[in-house]
Image 1 (cartoon, helix red, strand yellow):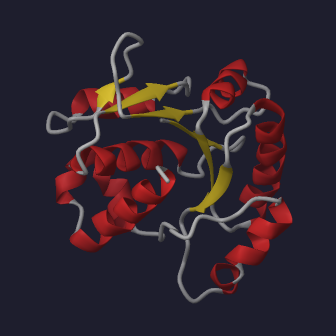
Image 2 (image 1 turned 60 degrees about the horizontal axis):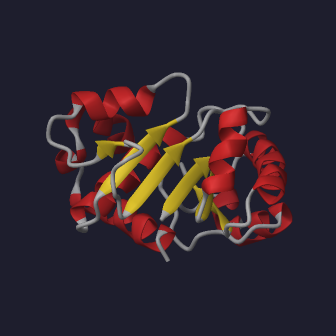
Image 3 (image 1 turned 90 degrees about the vertical axis):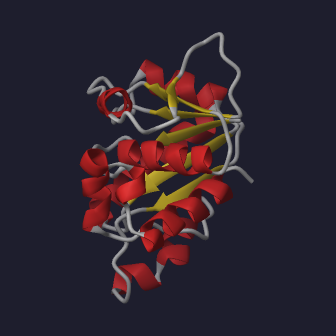
Length: 186
């Protein structure tokens, strides 16, 4: 299964969620490869520096249960279009903020052009109890995509994950990512 995480805007959390979902799937027994198509190379560096992870950088000749592709934050990127054409599932990662949603709408249009895979919006950096968090289903409907049932809360722990690794995340945080990871494979 190839899962593409996409958004034409930077800063939505694509790379962080690519790695954390990969780590959750690895913990669940999947053999996982990550293909880093973002020119910044953050996913590659993260995996190279995390000695405790079983997640691998994608290698063409290897057999994986899941491959996650981290895409560049540019809608006109050939790497994004190519990744979408390979997808079995597309997750458009977006916060519920209007600026992220505008680009998410354009990303959804691009997904429809380049992929036959089911696409869902994965809301990230969600603050519980806010006006925006209460209207996620309506927001997704306006984008023309179903929202994943799982959402990712705004937590500082996700920023720490790069330095401290998967095992250092509190249990509730890991559970949140596990739910999203398992939903992404359905």
